[in-house]
Length: 252
Image (cartoon, rainbow, N blue to C red; front, side):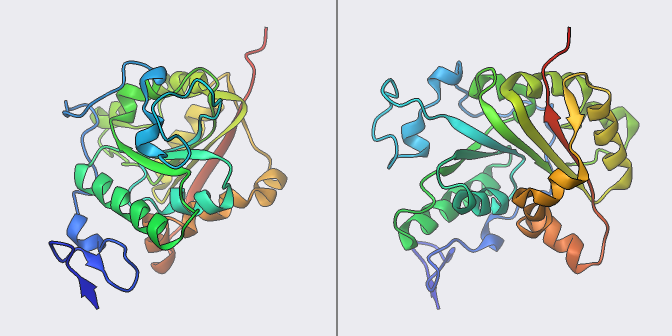
């Protein structure tokens, strides 16, 4: 049974939005100018809009908690929603440039909060261009995990500058990740997988995580199972190429 809530976008049995009403292009040009509000600095991020049960007012002076996980290009929000219950004490946010997709994730989180009282209060989403505005949202050393799952491969060489993993952008990610923080990447495009791994290997502030650590990390299993793209690859019997690296201190 479906409930309209003014349009036919919600499933009555689950209270969650129906994805087909929020479809958008698979990717967006990150170098184009989009119009959405951007905080002047991390201190200007209004946590009460994202986590109202945890932060009833915009004044955070008495609460030291900050967002620790960021899913860059979060798509339909599957990973963030899975992480929300796996790490209920951590605040996390999905960052997505496509407006319809962002709206879907917002409605999905609100629906889950309604049907699961006390849960999913620690997860939110924001429409933004992460390639431009990461420093506007996060302070130095604030994040403990960053995710880049199935990003746009930008196959043409002239468009490689649009890739969300690059030597220049890794400088920014290293800035907002704390020492010991982890960056997770995965793709089903082998050439992009090699590109991302090579960028990380060549960056002085990241080191590859060992196979033993990967095996023990519960998050790694979610990189495929919790995302729409990962599930599609699995259904089609495709390969994935992951690179998981740790933020280290700059030696010397």
